[in-house]
Image 1 (cartoon, rainbow over the protein chains, first blue to last red):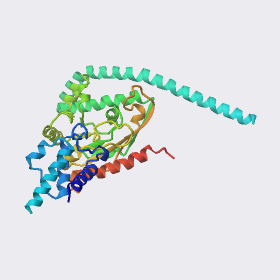
Image 2 (image 1 turned 45 degrees about the vertical axis):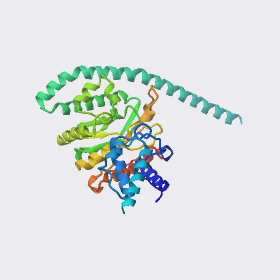
Image 3 (image 1 turned 180 degrees about the vertical axis):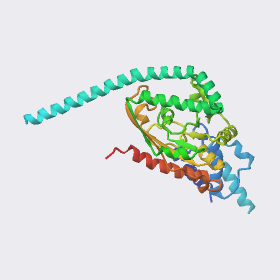
Image 4 (image 1 turned 120 degrees about the vertical axis):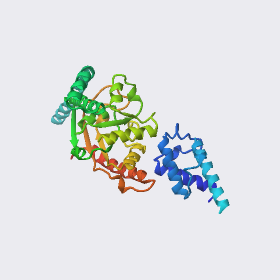
Length: 87
Length: 271
């Protein structure tokens, strides 16, 4: 799975599960100001990503520093590469 | 040909008269409803301390329950003030009598949606709303005493604590899961707080569909128009049917779909 495919999976899953407009899913979109997510949406977002990529991230400290959709893309890409490197 | 022109002109005259009549009704409505609402609000505020003393002496209810009942009566007064210009229709609302406590959710079209909740046959409901209604200083003390939740600024932990206390006392909670009034009449994105609470507390979630309040007073319009308002309760949803960490998200999708279908049917003109 390459980086573009990962981004595509993230955007599709978030658009479907959190009812976000795909046109607004740009890397610089702020989760709170632009996408109007609240703290519970972020918890849901973690669940969505865990289900989409079959990994556990809810305990990871880095999740708390995510502010934009681009941060999510980069975080998941790093996590996938890390897991693939370990396997 | 002459007869046809005569009929046409008669129809045009009737239409012009109908438009004129409608304008007069709108003027009369706005000239009476707003002042009456202000008077009714002032009377209610002045009456509250005396009513509270009588209530607490006679019934010994907790203050939050008394205030919620009082707010419900205030809402009933609003319905009476509106009734010469607005037709209210209650549909399948009796279901709420047997299902307390519950999490209620409603679609949001107008500032007056909250007032329409006085159509419900139950009064012990704490509203979970955004911050701006708390800025109305004449309502704020009552909202505080009734334990209304500020879902915009209160932390989720505080909301859970308040919700737990309300539910333990058999009170229900009402959310507008869209967070904002709809600008196009269609359902917007749902936030998941109400669904998560229903799942966490294992109590039924009852969707309410409201139609017509956007004719009465939509966002960005400041005058009222006569309207026909319908409020319908859908079948209660048991959160135990949606298991797992994403169960509340699945429940949200199912409920939203049911509400969309119901609202579509409610907006359709009667045959």
